[in-house]
Length: 153
Image (tube, rainbow, N blue to C red; front, side, top):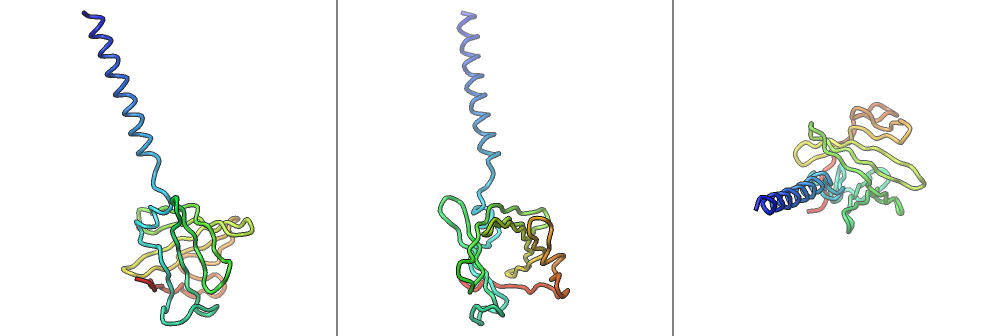
């Protein structure tokens, strides 16, 4: 009788261990890039002035979710500017940092700040630490980055 009880207890322990490992794997897998972008409400088209048509002087940025949990980042009106968003992390201060893979073999890290319904770039750097934006200011002239609003829905 004692052998059967020990065997049943061992099976129960094994089942519990397998369930625990499965639960831990599910919890540790993390969110997809798309999940994180959705949580930050970033998908859509953004511009400083949505009434202005997209141009080099008034660019629009569009973030599009893709099947399978991925996303692309496009600068409008630049045809062929779509880049793949390979990482997205929301920091404890509420900012989001994106890793964007651009052609040819160029990686950018972009950090965005939100204030209500507006966003702006806090930093933008190419792999190798060459910044175009740092601390919310353009490196080339020191101007503050503009706030952008969502242009669609």
